[in-house]
Image 1 (cartoon, rainbow, N blue to C red):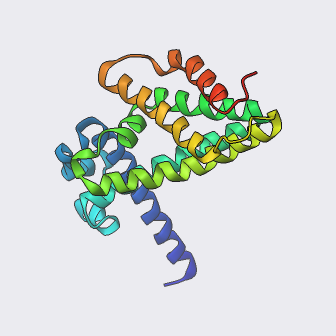
Image 2 (image 1 turned 90 degrees about the horizontal axis):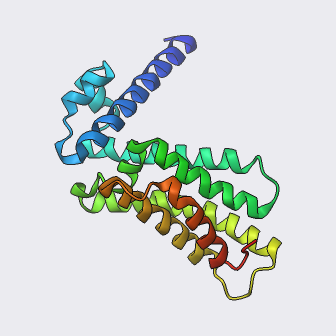
Length: 203
């Protein structure tokens, strides 16, 4: 096999994997982990069951791969928007706004990251913790940056504040998914004020 042929085969395999992840995201968001059928994922992706098990040894591994990809996509979107700002407090605000707006706009993402995998048991909880911990590292840096720039009081732990930040956003999103209210966008001003006051940098 030539290098060009190998590269073409790799690109084809990667494209198939992306199709599977995209289809799986929709099926899992609609049905949850337990009720989602691999055959439906195959049909939506236009691939084959063999392709599913070539890339993912089990339905569980496919679900976890979807979660991981969605977490990365959310983090990249936040990083991209934050990079446009120079003021530390504004950077923190933009991170919050982008997170809330993304979860609001992409309901399947919110469902999969926050609620739809609990029937899996510990595997979902562990992967969710990994995704959230990675996101918390980013928010911790933004919080610490804002605290230094705005002269926040001593004694506030940026890491704890980042967990509280994520917890507040998550709970608002879960309440919206399960009860239809409050709309996350309507909750955004309160969340922004809570974050600022919580770290002592209210403008």
